[in-house]
Structures are given as structure tokens and as C-alpha cells.
Length: 306
Image (cartoon, rainbow, N blue to C red; front, side, top):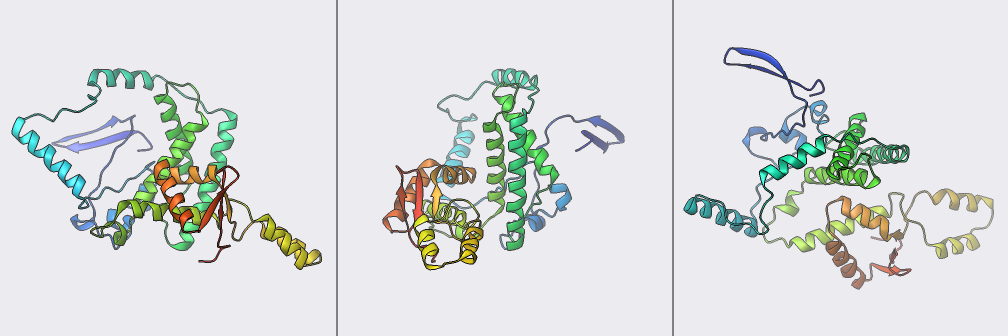
């Protein structure tokens, strides 16, 4: 993969051909069936060094869902009866137009400006920090290394080509990071949550979004309640308490979260604005949090209590 070549040894032919292209690979699970009780790495049964060479990985499982099963059955029966796929509205893009677009995009060689380079470095450092926390909690299935940094750059350049641009923009980097987050989220499969028959998907999404926002209060983002800081300053006198309060600003429970950061984190996990607002409204009615400053901030009301 790194040498961009492919070796062929079949039917008496042994040769090496150039393969300067993207690689789309698929693998069946170990023993022919995916086991949700073990990690994705154990199911795939490939070494971690090889998995780290792929930019993004998605876990695709055939789960019983009524809507998806009905749509698939209708499509198969229609093709069997009419020997043609059903009419799609709007009509799909013609192959000739798609080939022309891809040929035009491949001519672009997007460069990374200095300010975008610094932003990518900062994002990579945050990814390493987040990976360290996941590894400590035993939830890490992939390894974040220098190859991950190259993956972010490749995804950002590919997105710039799609825009027919000669420079990588910050939006390209954000979208590349979002794709990597969504791919990792697909590997973090919860069988008790996803495979349960009759589970309401809307409630499941709302619960997932709540957990994302809740984790932000202890992950370093947001800020503490200034009123509680003032109270602590009056009660605890002396330089020792002041220094302890200043050092505590970097960690601990931070009940006030910025809505812009919440949207970035939630959208990076693949959720929509509609699902986010549904989650905020539901837990606001339960007096878990409240919106302040013209809906620009979200304040937890429980001060860190579970």
C-alpha cells in the first residue's frame, strides 16, 4: 500500500503493477459471523499495524430493522419481476458526467496553507489526547499515530478536490475529522443497545447525544460557574485556597458549555441538528440543564451530581 504497487501471482503469471489509487477493502469477520461480544479488532482478525494504514473504517452489520428490511425486499422483488431497478427520484447522475467530474477533480493538487497546517497540528494533538483517555478506559479499538495525521491531510485534500479548489480550507479539515469520528463510532458497537428488539431509535440517539454533552463537562471544555467560584473565594481565605481554585479551573466539573462547541462535537459523531435540539428540549424539561445568553450556552443544574 505504501509503495503503491500490487503483486499478482496467479495462473502462472507473476508480476508487479502500479496501483497509484485509493484502496477500498472489505473483510469478512472471523468464523464467518460477527461476534458483538468481542472487540472489532478481534472480529476482523487483522494486525493493528495493518489496520492503521487505512484512513477510515466502517463497521457494516446486517441488523433486523423493519424499514430497512421492507425497502430491501421491495427492491429485490421489483428487479426480479421487471429485470430493471425501480425509478429513482431525483434521477441518478449519469456515468459520463461522474467520470468527467472525477477527471477534473484529479487534476487538482491542493496545498495546505500555514494557518491550516497549524490547525491540523492542533487537531492531531487533541486526537492523541483523546486516544489516551479511551485507551485508559479500555474503549480504544484503533491506534492514533503519525499515520493518523497523514490520514487527516489526505482526507482534507480529497475534500478540497471535490470543491475544485487549489487550497485546503478549515472546513475540509473539520469534515475529514468528522468522517474519522463517525468511522470510529461505528466500531464502538453496543450490542445491548443496537440489537435489542423494539428499541426506539429516537430515544437511543437522544441518550447518546446526552452522554456526549455530559462527557464535555469533565473533558476540559466549557467553564465553571462564576457564582460558585465567588462563593468559594469568600469562604476559603488565603493564598492556598486561591491557588487551589486556580489550578482546579483546568479540571473538574464545568457546568457551562458553549453551544457552538456542543454542535461541533455532536455533528462530528454523525448526529443532526434536529436530534440535538430534541435532546436539549427533552432534558431541559427534566430540569437537567437550561439555555442561557440567547441560547449560546448550556448550563447544567446538578453541579456534577449523577
